[in-house]
Length: 375
Ligand code: NAD
Image (cartoon, protein in one colour):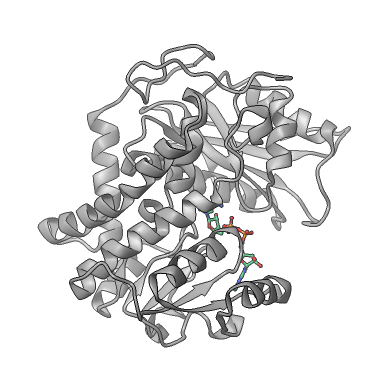
């Protein structure tokens, strides 16, 4: 892979490599765009086969964050950090988090870190000890804590819009939803759906997570290898990406796909393939924006109510994507991408550096607070 060519083709602004011999930290921070405001995106701790795979993932995820922020109406750009992490059960040391924190700090607010797969609130707290440019910090330290419940709420809101589009009513009662991934987002979604009167089945490669949800909610269970192709009204991918790919798309037996996982389509043409099969796809980066809407609030003084109100609007945004798709004769994924890119071009704030206390570019001039080092 020619990194600079990929960056130029996709409009990435900057990539930073971190390799610290003392702590063993190896990371890539990719900033796709700060055109709408500081780039915001999670830190993923994951075992990549090689540097190329890690860089490719960071670049792809950072661009997706730009689209997500733009579609959600945020004055923020897209960034992502990935950290080579071989053993998911081993927590980070304070020294390792400090190395990451210093690398983030040197970007001067151009990249705002957050939680992603493999990361915890404790990681964000450790990073906050050295830089204010981190979100998802513990509530006791002035942060907003785990964004997952808000993400799950947003997916549920997007699902209502998809139900309206598909069946002419937002109600999810009596619909059968298969949730792939009984993690933080999947379990929150299951609770909301059951409260609506939906029938829920869950699937996870981790039997402990399935058992916990069965014990709590009494949901049905689907084997991991059957989840994507299970017969249901709605498939909700809430695990990892690329569930819709050339080998699964012909076997799907759902009417709607709407879930929290990032990058659900393995390639853009899967959007067309789903449309051709008559399956309605609620674009992942539109419906899973609750997490960033929640953490974006941290920089202007966190308000859970304001975050929930913004996240509830995902229902309208999703409905708008479907309407634009009809107007532009595009499948929903491509329509959402065009909508987001048009906004980035229409409303550039200007690429820059930010300081805590600056007027926040994505609010009406309210100052950014940030979580101060050591606070
Ligand atoms: P999580 O780690 O809590 O849960 C993911 C679950 O998926 C785990 O229980 C894991 O065992 C399971 N899983 C992995 N592969 C699987 C497979 N093949 N079949 C079934 N289960 C499988 O993560 P999360 O925070 O719930 O995030 C889930 C997805 O949503 C991720 O793709 C993440 O990037 C995305 N997302 C999360 C947030 C958030 O706020 N947490 C926000 C936006 C997007």
